[in-house]
Every structure is written in C-alpha cells, then in structure tokens.
Length: 86
Image (cartoon, rainbow, N blue to C red; front, side):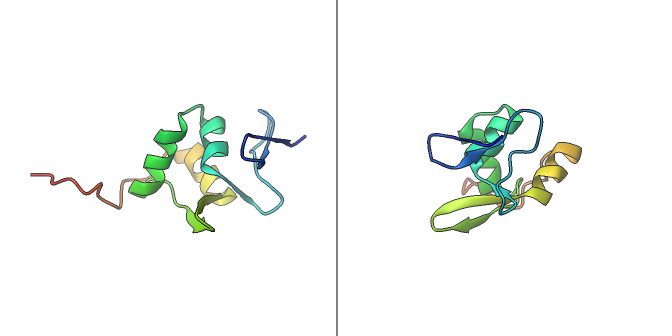
C-alpha cells in the first residue's frame, strides 16, 4: 500500500522500500525509511554521501542507491561544505 506524505508524494509501508512506480524516492521518504531527520539526509545528498539528481528543484534518490545505502551505508563525502579544513 502506498500512502502520501505532506508533500503529496508516495510513501511505502515499513515492510518494503518506499519507491514510486518511477523507481525513486524523495529526501523526505528516504529520511523516513532510514529513521533520520530530513535535514540529515539532505546534508548527505549535498555532501555527495547519497547520490541523487535534482528534478524541478527537488532531489530524487533512485531505488538502486537506496539498496546500496541499506547494504553498505552512505558513501564517503565527495563535496565540501564550503568550510576551510585547515
């Protein structure tokens, strides 16, 4: 069964990966799946820890990436947050 969250996007139940028929989820949906705060998951995307694409101003995380994260965890950061590290 697929419900909708406050953004009107589909959210799967707890027994399955919450993907739409398009094969992707929003940051909010991934946050729910991983039991993390939305801001944490968005930060992971911005740092490159979670691979996502931006469509119409919103990030989309593909199903393959979700399976990767669930199996191996988030990736090493590929982007800096703009702060000097020295």
